[in-house]
Length: 442
Image 1 (cartoon, rainbow, N blue to C red):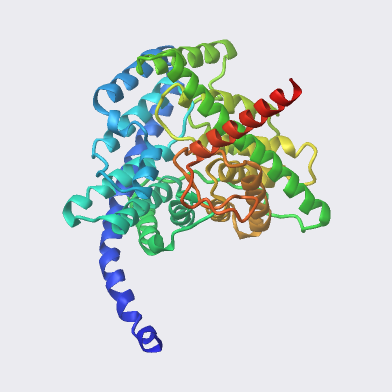
Image 2 (image 1 turned 90 degrees about the vertical axis):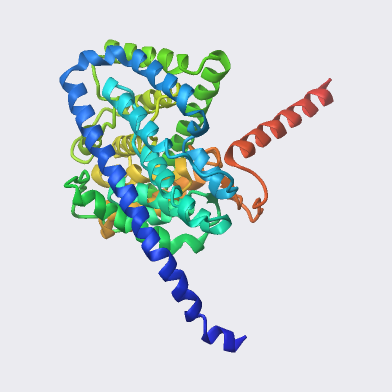
């Protein structure tokens, strides 16, 4: 055994030689796709804000997007959940069409005034483009899982400009309670190359800044950070559950898929018209920036939560993460009214902590906070992300995410459940208990 350990370096070297060039290619694919996404979304947002009458056509855009997917994209409509399922149980190569379809669908959502993000689009483009290499190298099993994970990491890193967070996100998002380190090196290289590729196209990520002076940690500051994390986790859970419930309602009541975003789009457009503001549609980046600079209305987070849940639940394409940044930053801003932490710091904590709870990725979210806001705020960010992760329960925005280890105990569910299955099992158990209590009372 000792003899074998002396020669482990000769096992590591072929691994590096194999995955270094492949990861570079994945990063270039994902970075180029993210550059196209960011450029198109910037144009779509500017055009919509200059021609706000186009929001009235959101129902038509919804129908068009729904029809395109119904006609050409049924096998990729599951989006991010399809990626996770393929990593857990590799079966079929993800069709190339996923990339252009989700890019088109996301652009339609933003151009006509839906409330959505962009990370889902970047992940799907990065992973689907990466999976095309399977046709060349004939990857199977673990190698294909690594390939897809690297594509996810590259997509995340390149769309947000956070290579370290992107690396860990691709590893952490797969399962609650477990990280697969066999994809660490390819994910890191792909994330770094993907981010640099996007920057080479001349695109720049939004700079978020909070107060340069971070308060000294005291007992009350510590308690305030925990309280904030509890709020962030509860709101993250609400977002995931409301979005899934709206999606289930539309699918149960409307059998023809293109009609779902048409009706949902009509409701969103009506709300925008009645409210007289476009603050809660699109990415919402101006409001996110404002959350670090001025006191905002305390209901901003709830309004964005409702609009995004309705948009995505009705079947529009896009991501959840940037709206979660909006929800978290504005919620943190509101919490500064009664917590002993500065509003800019709380906005930064909420920015990543609500995402940590909704995606069940506390480590990646903490790294993201450090990359975006600086190391000085890292302890506060880490507390809020971990507490949010705990208080979000086992719900999540990705229903295909596995539960390898229960958050609150040592119960190992490795061979068990996806988030969606776990939630349904929990509901069934509660129903059984209620039925037994009813029978006992009778």
